[in-house]
Amino acid sequence: MGTARRRWTTIPGVVLAALSLTALAPLWVPIAAVADLLRGRTRLPTVRLLAFGVGWSWLETAGVVAAFALWLTGRRHDLPAHYALQRWWAANLMRVLRTTTGLTVDVDGAEALTPGPVVVLCRHASLADSLVSAWVVIDAGLHPRYVLKRELLLDPCLDVVGSRIPNHFLDREATDSAVELDALRTLATGLGDRDAVIIFPEGTRAADAKRSRALARIAERDTPRAERLGGLTHLLPPRPAGTTALLRGDPTADLVIAWHTGFEGLDTFGGILRALGRGAPRVQFRARRVARGDVPSVDDPAAFTQWLDDRWLEVDRAVADLLATAPAGHRSSSRARRSRSRHSRRSTEPMRS
Image 1 (tube, helix red, strand yellow):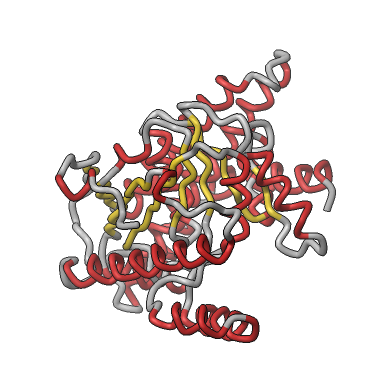
Image 2: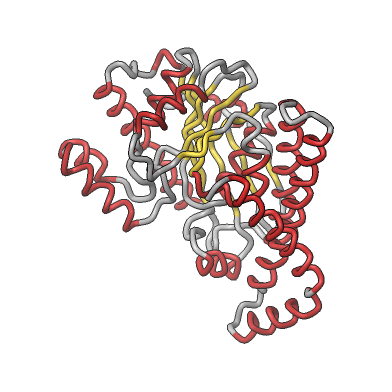
């Protein structure tokens, strides 16, 4: 689908959704509430999810209108204005998410993100973790450049605003991977002290079946690596090509490895409803910085891949530890709060290299 055709479909669609959900709220709120109660869902997860849909659709509408106003006034290439719009959108979308679902976010290690330039390698478990990582990075005062899948262009704000600031929407079906990798190298070129490039090295949201398939594919061409990664229980094997391309783009950038818990099982509509029914989601976000000098050269692919695998195994264990020590139930807190980076001894230590 071409850009113009896509936008003529998605933008009116999100505006219609905002108007319809708002106008029909007196109808869908009681119906959804009764449906939840009949299923014993006393936290009304369907009502909460639809309420988030109202907030999301209006924020999308406002973001597109603001982007149109920038275009109309000849500021289509005004990066500071678009970064400000991105910051406003991310902050308010997080506010809507907290208000409607009770989500709490506990951030430890945000100071590891600054100063730039940094390449951030982030765990991927849900669509929402892209938002949380953007919120954390932007709150640290950085301008994020994202490597995202092309399908996310169906989100109007990501499509319009995300295409005006440095991002790359990856075509995962591309027949020529060299073109995509070259685009990633370009994306990481010219980073400054307020820039961060974020990539999800797993390439897709983690799930047990995906992990098994990924390990089987690796085993076909690299049995020792498949055996090395066989201990993963929460993450997928990392794909080194994208990270390698970004590091080639900026040979001075440090790495930040980020992970989180709280999004497990939230990769489907049913999973989200079940999670919201159990309690207010609690996300724990962690980040650790690795000095570039402690990272093997990408010109030695075997050494770099093994280093990346070892870090990913460490993150997998860190995720397991967080899950094991989280409160019972849905491992969440019923009180909406946000904890800024806690400057502890652990949060300032780089990951072991």
